Image 1 (cartoon, rainbow, N blue to C red):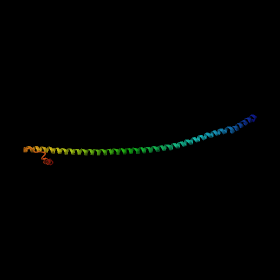
Image 2 (cartoon, rainbow, N blue to C red):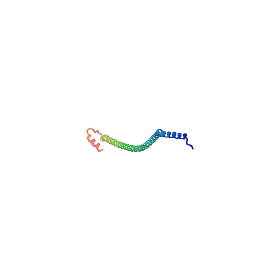
Image 3 (cartoon, one colour):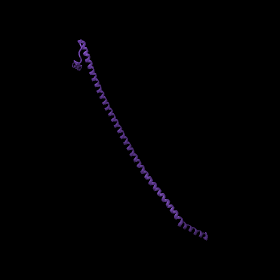
Image 4 (cartoon, rainbow, N blue to C red):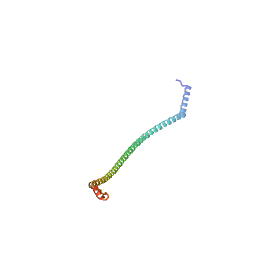
Length: 156
């Protein structure tokens, strides 16, 4: 192998190319690679942070849903209790109204029975007077003997 000027020229040109690349091109490429690595690292860190936040948010959402279900259950229980209370009050009111109407009806029946007794006594007294009239064959004055007729009606 012969060393000639062409080989030395190529070596010098190659050395200049390497020096030029190291001085001017390599720093830009290296900076671009470092920026890309930094962006990737930042993106991975942001993704990990977002994943952790998502996990925390899921846990908070699950807790809120659990609390909402408990509240809904409590509200339903309270509504059921109120409905039962309203039903019980309505039943009690209905029973008291029935008892009141029953008492009124019993009073009315007693009143009607008393009136019927009074009317019956008067009719019996009148019949007794008419019967006595026929027996005695004379007229008895009802106005004069009212006290006697009232006593007779009371005994009957």
